[in-house]
Image (cartoon, rainbow, N blue to C red; front, side, top):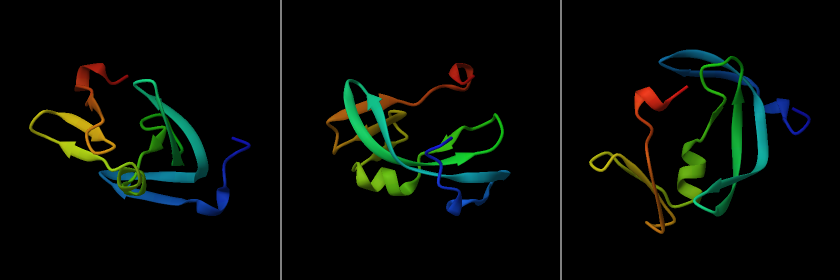
Length: 89
């Protein structure tokens, strides 16, 4: 929480609302042995811990493939499947 920039607080609105606590500007995220530097919006509560937003999708050249149920990153260099509802804690 010491890395949290609270100047970015607010409310996330979508299906329901949730309080935004702030943003962490640089987080190392490892996906398939590759490191991605991302900024994350941190939410209050226990349903969703953070949002991987459109800014990160654009930065890492992501393609959401709903036919194959996959997220392709770096123009297809890395592909990861979406979790099914039963796999989400």
